[in-house]
Structures are given as C-alpha cells and as structure tokens.
Length: 293
Length: 184
Image (cartoon, rainbow over all chains, first blue to last red; front, side, top):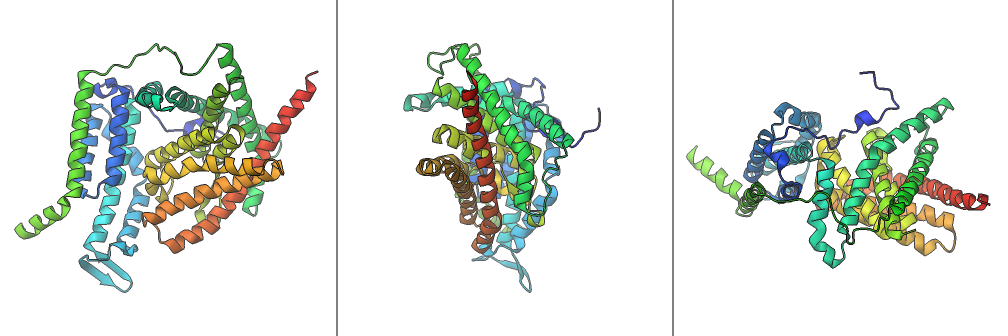
C-alpha cells in the first residue's frame, strides 16, 4: 500500500466498518438490532447503577463473541481513547464538587478531596463510555448501510400515519452515507488543484485569516456538491421518482423467532438494569460487602 | 421540479458534507491552546437557508447522530465522552436549521447578504448555547467555565459560520442567475 499523503481523506473515514463474519447476529433483522442499540444507549445514559452498567458491559461482550468479532479488534477503538478517559475520570474524581454533599470523605489534601461518591462517579464514567463504544461498534460491525436504511424506514413506518415522512428520511440518510466517499474524493481533487496554484490551507495569524484561507476549498466543495445534488434530482425525476407513496420494495424484512428472542432478552436485561438503578442496588451491595468483609 | 425530491437530496448531500468535515478533520479550525473551532454545523445552516426548516432539521439530525457516533467510535478529545449522550449531541442540533431559517426569512427582504451572515451567526449561536446549556444542566462543567467557552469559542465560531454561509450561498445564487442569463 502506498504512503498516504495529506490530501487523502478516504483512508481516514473509518466509521461504519462492516465485518462480514456471517454470524447469527449478522443474520438478525436490522430492525431488531436498531431497536436494541437505541435501547442500550438510552439505558446506559439513564442508569446510575454501576452494577447495572457492568451487566450491560457483560452483555455487549457476549454479543461480540456471538458475532465472532475478534475482541482485540473491537477494543482497538477503545484503546485510543483510554488516556483521555483516565484524565476525565480523574477530573471527575477530584475537581467536581457536586458529589461532596452527604458523602464519606476518604482523603483530603489542601484543595483536593476524594469522597466515595466522586470515585464512583469516575468509575461510572469509564464503564458507561466503554459500553457505549463497544455497543455501537458491535452494531456497525454486524449491519450494512443498506440494511440500516431498510431498518430505519420499516421502523418509522407506523409514524407515517401521523405525517412523519419515513421513506423520505431513510432515503436522506442513505444519500448522505452514499455521498460521503464522493465528497471526500471531490475534496481531494480540489485540494490538489488549489495547492498547485499555491493555496495554503488553514494557515494564518488569526482565525478570520485561517477561515478565509479555507474558503478556496470550502466554497467550491459546497458548489460542486450542490451541482451533483441537482444532477441527482434530475436523474431521479427522469425515472419518475415520486416519493414514498405507493412504492414497493425488492427486499422485504421479515422478523424470525431469533429476532423476537433477542428483543425479549434485551428488554428483560434493560428492565433489570433500570430496576437496579432505581432500587439503589449499588448502595445495598456496598452495605452487604462492608458488613461481611 | 418536485420539491420533495429536491429537499430529500439537498438534505442528504449537506448531511454528507457535515459527516465529511467531521471525519476528515477539515471541519476544525485550530484555535487557542488546542481548542478548535468547528464548522460542521455550517452545512445545516446552508441547507436550511436554501431549502427551509424541515431540511435544516433533517441535516441537524444527521450531524447530531454522526457526532454521537464519532464521539463513541473515533473520539478526538476528552470532551467527546460527553457527546456520547444524545441529549448533548443530537437534541441541540435539531434547532440549528430552523433558527437559522427564521433569521434568514425575517431579514431576507431588507438585505439578502446581511440576512445570510446573520443566519450563520444565529444558527451557530443556537448550537453553542444549547450544547453548552445541556452540559451545564448535567453539571459536567461549572457555569463560569461555560460562560468563558461561550465567549472564546462560540463567538469566533459564529463569525466563521457567517463568513462561510455568506460566501457559499451568495456564490450559489449568483451562479444560478448567471446560468439563466447565459442560456440564450
């Protein structure tokens, strides 16, 4: 492989990698995976219980194993973030006084105080983030963009009666995903063209100068994209595209027993985590541990 | 020309530019001490100005969803941890387009160039204020620091957004009228 130059962008667009291992998880209905993924994000954000988040982490790791994705590959996304994450957890532990109220002070030196709650907040932050990264990675490793688009459209269909343009929204997402590599290619060409005329991107004494130096790239990039959009609109209309109304599909999504099973398991787990969070399970566990140890 | 097809395609393409600006890091202009000004929200403003509030909303949704995904999958800094929360990364971004469109529509008749610049400022400030506001409500950051960030990062970002919105939309509209006059 040739060395990357500063003009190449395609190599850096890493989002949405797909690993075709053909596992049971890959064969699940994209709707199921989308729902579980959204549920996971909501529950991870809402849950205050470390125990619950650890359960979710276990579930995501089992999911990665089921999808036959090498653990080291999945963790590589997390590894790059680790230094920042530790820094932030430390910040959460030391500097933010919100956890000071009715907490046990463990250690105090000058301005710095550590309480049991601030330590918990730091650990929670790391755990929550790990679940989110691994969960979203698992989704993108096991779902193609086409499946994603179909999934979104089917899931939004019930809301169509209320006036939500399900098909249109799904098509918009699909066009956006399809256009990213095209725009990256276009930007590469533009940067080379402007550099050959002596352009110097993003240099300058202050931010207004730096912005003005970016204009020779940004303005043509927007204009070229708008022209491409115009061409696409014309092509779609030449083929009598009339929006979602009365449209039929080549691919019909069908939920199987495995999908219902996966959904039921996910809902049960999420309910358990929310239950643990509302019942203050962490404090109960802490008390149990401190009495028996 | 059917308006729905037009709206769908413009929203998709502007969403793609926003994703590209984020993924390639071209959308970040280096600023004081490692902090960066972002222009990822500019496609939202431009789309809203060109095609209306619904398109702005759709691009905002794509921008927000992408910034959540990017914060989770390919993070670039410590603040990205906060952006894995959809209340920080998605919800505030939905308002950028409609606000920018309102500003543009209110001022369009008086002076089009001015209205474009103002809509850039309004859209950008909507982003800054709502995102920082949510961060403040979550107590991720103390309010005093939020005020400082709003001034040191938010205001330059608004100026940058105004410059780019004006440059792109003015060029696009002039180009269209120029084309019309040349077809004999």
